[in-house]
Length: 420
Image 1 (cartoon, rainbow, N blue to C red):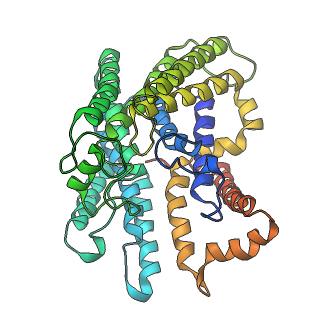
Image 2: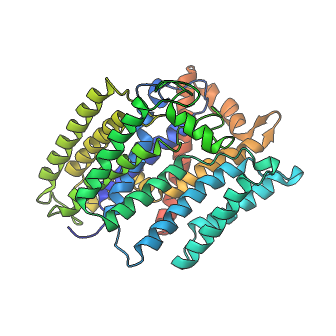
Image 3: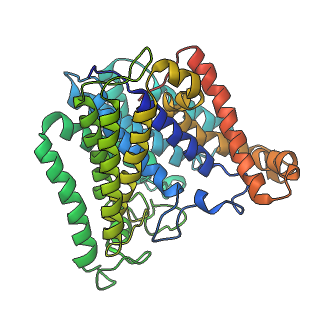
């Protein structure tokens, strides 16, 4: 297969970004439909499948990206820039300068955008990222009051770590080693969580705030964890181990797609080889889904802990969706005609991810009376239009998606795509 972008992957990524935007931006956090909320602890919802889908796509994209002679440098640079984008979001609300706070925060985010999304020579990108990483981590542990509780883990941070491990495994190891790492991370994590006593707590367990992963987070990153829990983090240290397996699941799917005789026809029609690929992907997805469900009876499916059963279930759903897209998206013409609103999200995901974290924070600082601008627009411009508050909240999220669609169409028309 030619080393080119598969339309099905862009659509897959676009659907994931759209769903992420919806679940992260409801009009009213007190009124959300159940599938658009995370499971309280064990179990999973549609929302719980968003994050692993990003890691699955990271694995696929690693295989399909153009090989580089400077692969180690490229991988480290990209991982650092992704990590720093996430860490910049954590710093946003910690920057304080009296009446000039908003201005200073915007300037800091503008600098982060140029530094970590800007296109300039590779080695310069790497050293800028190294210097910025040292500065921000140094501030976290500097003893400066404003920065003593900056959250270090996060979604982009986990994506960065998983990308780095998966990309290096892909570049420098064999398929046999990659499968070994996949199995070892799932089984090893299960063993750690089930058999290792928790210091200060007692026997191994999967309870909130009392499990081994929570203890390790609090031991190594006390004061720099998720603000909601303060003592553990859903993107913490130990649970990143099985998250690597999620990225590797995508890597295996990407290797299969890369090794297949045909990709997606650029002109039209239904190219030879699409149906067999879709069938194999569908079968693999069904097997993973069943295996994860069965394992979940003994090691519960849990997104916050990123349990091994959760890895398999999430990968199963990802494979099923990828199979459907592989079977139905046959040409660039077809994709551009019917999937364009989704494609634009899939081709500029980091732009949406980063600025979706900034825009609500900025608008929340602009006050109309006692309300932030976003809340005021929702309260007086959207909510009164709906009798049901759940529908109003969903409408608020969908309007935000539409606003992003307009922005992305603008960038797409000018062929501007931002990558780390």
